[in-house]
Amino acid sequence: MALAFDEFGRPFVIIKEQDQKVRLRGLDAQKANIASGMAVSRILRTSLGPKGMDKMLQSPDGDVTTTNDGATILEQMDVDNQIAKLLVELSRSQDYEIGDGTTGVVVLAGALLEQAQKLLERGVHPIRVAEGYETASRIAVENLEKIAQRFDFGVNNIEPLVQTCMTTLSSKIVNRCKRSLAEISVKAVLAVADLERKDVNLDLIKVEGKVGGKLEDTELIYGILVDKEMSHPQMPKQIEDAKIAILTCPFEPPKPKTKHKMDIDTVEKFQTLRKQEQQYFNNMVQKCKGVGATLVICQWGFDDEANHLLMHRDLPAVRWVGGVELELIAIATGGRIVPRFEELTPEKLGKAGLVREKAFGTTKDRMLYVEHCANSRAVTIFIRGGNKMMVEETKRSIHDALCVARNLIRNNSIVYGGGSSEISCSISVEAAADRYPGVEQYAIRAFADALDSVPMALAENSGLQPIETLSAVKSQQIKENNPYCGIDCNDAGTNDMREQNVFETLIGKQQQILLATQVVKMILKIDDVISPSDF
Image (cartoon, rainbow, N blue to C red; front, top):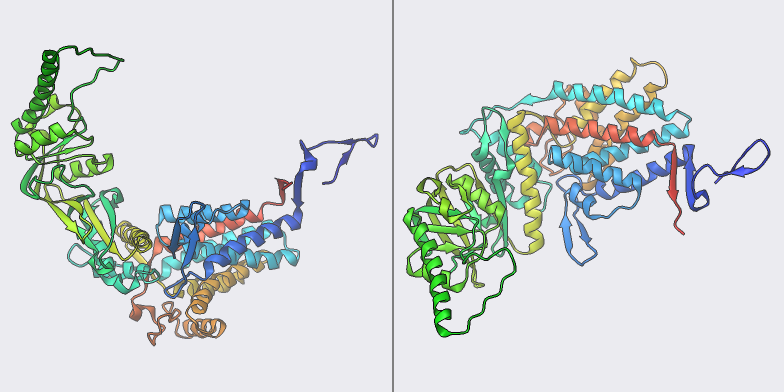
């Protein structure tokens, strides 16, 4: 690092411990940043689209994840470089806001960086490039508004929603069951959606998975699924018209908060203590029976004596149910969570039409279904799969599909997929570039070239000739003035995405372009990187 000298020629320190720091400045810093951004983008490029590859990631403690989801790949990759971390955050923000398109947004950012590098090498100032990109992204977003179509759907006409969810699922490992999984996702979202306010609370949809069975056995339960069983093997396995007491207090005698010691020196004293304990248990069970409860769901455990008493008093019970599940059960059954036995009243009981215990396979695994609830606004998607990785990947795919359905309910505009919207934006940005004099024109044209990288990656991953395919589709769009022509990844014989039913949400696409541009602008504006050296 260069030392600074004062007017007497004596060196002085600008940065603390500067001999231990590495510094990159000017064009070198920008090139290094762009290279690391492109490296991350290159990793995800191959997993874009319906024919995209999956990545297998092993965590430090040996857990293996196989996934196609951009956000998950980057989360688990454990990236060290500062600029690469920005791209991880970019993918994460797309995941949080939209839920889908996490791979595409990174591929687009990588392509923008690649184009920017060419301009920087020709001597264009990075700020001019950034401003050109900003202008171009506005043109692209306006063009998306123009080519978007509105989708009308209702509770009875869910086909449009199902088709859009199928597009999302077709790039995942679960694409052989995409029809049934898309229907499950849409029905789940519509069950909890508030169509007047156009709002969906995804917390009310619980996604449970269990290894075993096949993917086709995945089902939607209008109720709650709890991975617990009845506390006593002889309790009834099915309860109809259940009145549920939801407790967060333990079934055991109260303990003093302070330290205590009890001396028992005679048999009589022990008998008295035991009687007292039994009395406590009796009172507890009696209070539950007294308010008319036919099932007790408890957050804590209870010992064998309480279990035995509950069994004899014909009061089925479930113990060790987690807090989140308790809340969902309370929402679904319309019950109240009761913290003390004294506060139990008949109004606080939840109601469910059917509570049943179901066994799976030969492993004696049992789960509890709470169905036909008073308030059906809490549902569960129950996923089956051949192995743990499959179940986890299906959970991630279902999450993407749920997010897409939610976005369509919020804003029912769609654009067509298969790279058609990117090609259309590229053509309109290219055409608009002529209106801008000065250096920004180069940056706007570079933005148009970068947009072509998404359809190019789709063609490449599908085993087609990328440049030939892209130029053929682009010329077809210009010739027919048809912004719905895209890459025919599935070899369906037509380039028209309307016939192939490949849709994406408008807000998802707009978010991709805006987020990618923002991050690239940020990276281009960095001209000095000071980092601690490795030794």
